Length: 298
Image (cartoon, rainbow, N blue to C red; front, side, top):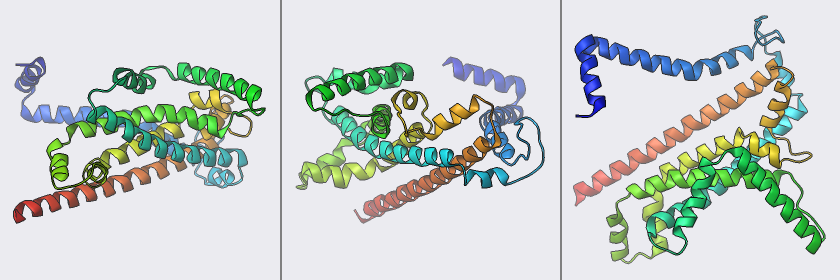
């Protein structure tokens, strides 16, 4: 008997089944409150008529109206969305290839080193990763200036490189976990029926890991959208992302305009998550129905 099971039985014996149920619901409620009350407070204070973040001065939409004329904030938001979209797409693509290599090919030269390099960004502080990338780009810039006569300026491309390094590691872990759970007999059956390896991957493997690909895309998109450390190391003139804009302004005090743009991002991201969850659930339900129909037909 495990310690967790023993503690559960002792709790039920002391409190009773109904009290235990309500105790669990209370802890769940406190957990949700801890997670979402700060977000709710941010949304509420985005409609605050006072410039002081801790003083309620009435209800207003003026901060959202002022946001339409804030060029720096809108430019940073557009740049962050573009980098996050490109990072998520590239991270999922490279992460899928890396996960497929690690799961399907158990032995190849340099596999341990490859797996270690994939997982290294997950355990290293972002400050170390950002500094390492900065030093590498400076060295690359000097080499290009000496050999080609032109350099790689810091900007959107360098920020994308940094976000891609971190995003690919997360995408690989998510997709690798799903690939490890697949039944290899399905792929073997497809190959026995004459399918080529590429056809097996596109027609059998890829549909079964679609959920993990969507999850990895959303995760890497979010990580890139709110990254501050890597962007601070790798940004250049004219390439200030939204988190950097907010961070620089927050040094002088949090203003309702920052709450307004944060609320817009929360709403957009929430709508995207709900839509993606709906599409994933519908695809899974359709796949289950097709499998059940195939079993009945067999």
